[in-house]
Image (cartoon, rainbow, N blue to C red; front, side, top):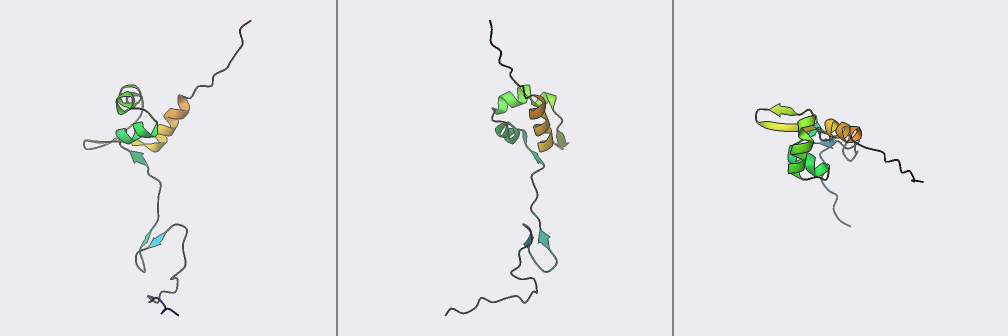
Length: 94
């Protein structure tokens, strides 16, 4: 029989909270979704080249500037994609 692992004595030790990680008795780290990305990553998320993204998409969307850093909010990318989605109606010609 192997020896038991040492415990810290916290009452909630061993219990998992929904995705949170305990770093100490009063500190929890809760994972959050990424809110914004750099333009290079935004182009990658849309499966297009960085050059194409900068020429055809970036001029038409809102970005966040922090000094020289430019960030593209994920919600803006999602909205751009939905606004630019086209439904093709296939018709037969007589």
